[in-house]
Length: 409
Image 1 (cartoon, one colour):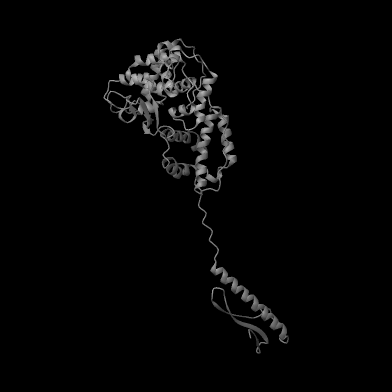
Image 2 (cartoon, rainbow, N blue to C red):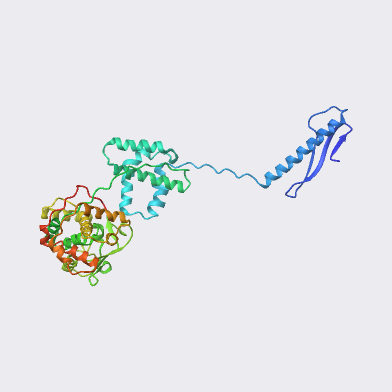
């Protein structure tokens, strides 16, 4: 009998052996727990049976808990500050690990040093919420010194580390960073007459920089791509093509913008400019006398001298690239072909040139129109027309006006 009577005390107690689900046998023993009258044997037995049931239930619950223990809560780690995260894991794993371009690295360093270090550097990542971002944006606007595009660039440098912290489960969520909607500035290009004058001035500057100007204006190369162009690897004088494999900016040589190589057909003017160079066909195409690359400063100084010699406003090499794209669009090039020649990642970048050509349509010089006569292949026709722009006859063309802001496309 599980419930027994103790004649010495007059009370009942229970003693029972149970087998739990995990196969373990337990011996349970106890009393009702609440003293009852000695003479009321029935009440004592009832209390002992109830105590026995409670003991069995508790034993099974303890066995189940032992078999399936609750997971321990992980120890809460201290959230790093923005400074610790930005210059620590984010910089190593994102900026270095994903091989950001040297220009991107330099831009991030400058923005962090000037705008973020003192303002957000000491704050924990989980303290930078939507309100904190809104206050920071308001401070940038109130300074009155920054354009909306610049403010967007600063906020983007804040947003990326916070989103990466979420990916790494350092914080639960990142605040939304609302950027200003900024219209892209209109592309500015030299008109036909200005371009012809610029080529004439570049030819007077010397064969090295004349070839550099032709690479930018006749093939649409960026100045970093001009400086990094090599004879053996990138120039094919037989096939009359230029292959862009790399660029050099801020003394670092990397893949071209967009990280894709491209091949561009040479115009007659570019082919002639390259053949004029008195150099062994090795090393860099546009280079110093000792064979070293041209620097950023040398390139900037050269194009300013050429503009001054041509009697044109001061402008950089990138305007020559804009001229190449805009003039090709004026001549009716297939936009997808122009996208490949200029190395754009998205067709909407290429369409900017098409829109400029449509809104600033001008009559083509006769020498350009004549260059297309008799040519049935559409790409070859465009290349011939582009190569004819440098003719002095093109100086009679009507100027094509533009805005004062250049878009970096």
